[in-house]
Image: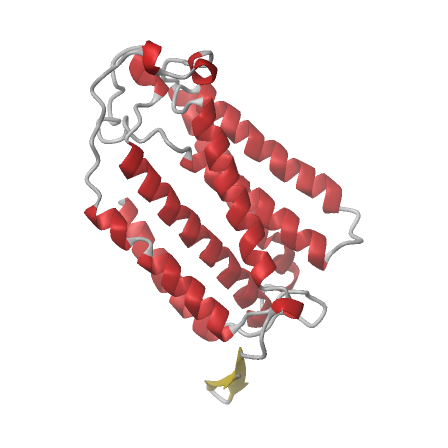
Length: 261
């Protein structure tokens, strides 16, 4: 599936979930806010516009001397196996943030609030990632160690920053932030949070070892993902929200939407 198709699906899902979502279960510290969420979804959608007009300029110069000292110490040839493992590992961290809603999966209120927050964070992260990848046009490490692998002809110059690492730390941080707030006394809090960051760190290491990214690519990706994983949930803490909200109430065979300000 092409990236543009994935983005369209995400945007459609975000709009759909927004209109079926209502405030989270009463014991949660998070809730949706009409003005805040419309603004975040609008901003995230607008951030994809520049991507349509950015023309990447692949760097044809291949010289290790131009690489900074830190990155130059960790340059490896392409390893498809490690590349694949890192992709599978990312799926684990991406799914982690929705773990708290599994016990109430039939409750649209819970699913909606967590879903909207995560989609907002995911969209913003993706937009920033795409802008940097197309603007910076940095060759991947494996281009310095041999020929460009088959199937990578349109991807070899998108090294900065690491999308895999970015999504891994987005999931780990989003989970750590929300789980700590909603379940501060859970005996699973520390083990799960440590596990999430362990997987995320492993993803970053695998991206380097597979020859797909430099150390600075991974560090930048970890920072961006962690920022949005922390920032978006904190915008939705009830004490920081205004009084506007969206409420969905089942009425017969239909749904009644209520908007309060």
